[in-house]
Length: 356
Image (tube, helix red, strand yellow):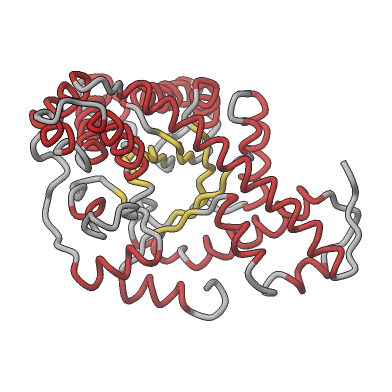
């Protein structure tokens, strides 16, 4: 995609404004073909599997940044970013996250790269420090409004720290990646279980709650965004050139075939939002997606929905806590599989790696 012109065509023809990467994406890319064989064979020096992966990853992200450089210039640094993720093993270690983010930032060495940091408690501490250092941050794996509030505070505080130190804040960029469809997947399963054991007369009402929580949760996150990026505190930062930390909707493919395949795109459109779509979802939206401002609709209904879920015995806090843990575990599994696959491929190509 980087080398055959496909990415450039998406930018020109479909107004694609950025890209993201993560261990799962690289795991699939490395496992499914031989596109990286020459790079693996040509890697010089004694490398660990992790160092070899980082070499491949940063080369790809740097190349993507260069392809998006035109978008970055044309939008004056608002769009055109490519995200690269710290390893999942540092999610609960702020110092390790900062150290890894600094290394990735320096290695890619492009103004339009964003370093992805999980929205954990320790991640929020790291985000503040990274923003203060002038490093663009994509906060990933956000599921709860509380976590979103925490990372917004980290971003604002980081901007204030940087400004107080006499450094410019007008070219810094950050997004808060709020995961969407996984919320419905988890809550729908719980509703099915509740309905199965409920009085027959109550079952239709319980089942009617399915497929609504994810959009409601994201819309309430957007409301928080509009609240926090207004008022005297924000006005002071904006006067110095600060940009808002835009909400980014992640996990936007419909996992349930009963739902519209562009459900998590059409319902979350609005100012300052970003939607990261897998290719199939992007194709579907190009074909039959409807564009209209929807992200701030029905906020009262969104609040009421979570009240009804609580009445049905489903705690959103429990759901989002589980989803964060599952997300970190999934990325760790992908990372472990990726490293093992890279070791196997390197051996097949006659490339020896350093054991750690």
